[in-house]
Image 1 (cartoon, one colour):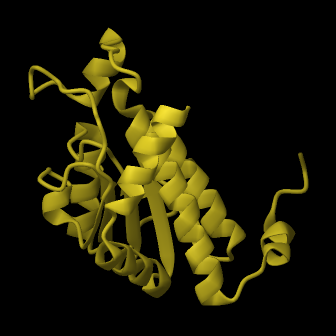
Image 2 (cartoon, rainbow, N blue to C red; image 1 turned 30 degrees about the horizontal axis):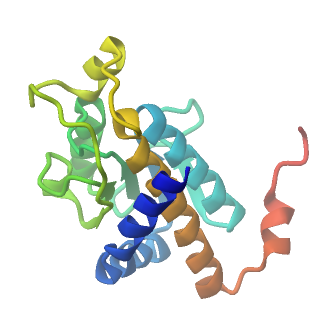
Length: 190
């Protein structure tokens, strides 16, 4: 845990304030925010969508049955370490064609999604190197290609989760929202 924490601190030290400001501006100026990611990055995205809802913003998770049609001017926030996962990139390209704004939280700016992103936050990570660059996320997951102290992008996902929570904290400051207001929107039927 200490090793991972030190890596996360290094990642945080290298985040771009300009990239963060651009992401926050996109969130604040969007009427509706859609989030997505594949696998564990998708879980980070869902947690982020929940916190946006707690903040009082209109947020949806792509792929859920109650997610409404995307419209021009909506924001799609994508969590993808590689920025190349086919299923996610296909949806990003469709969203862009519809006229949505694209925000990407990634460790790979030079990627298929990165090429179309309106806002890009680079979270450097120690992702496992894939020998065959054509291998996609889904194939690596199915084959169980694990190695290193933080396998399959764990460091990216952990850093992305911490980053997403920090963004929520900043949005709370900007919107003058206190924790009691968030608690009022928290589920009460569990």
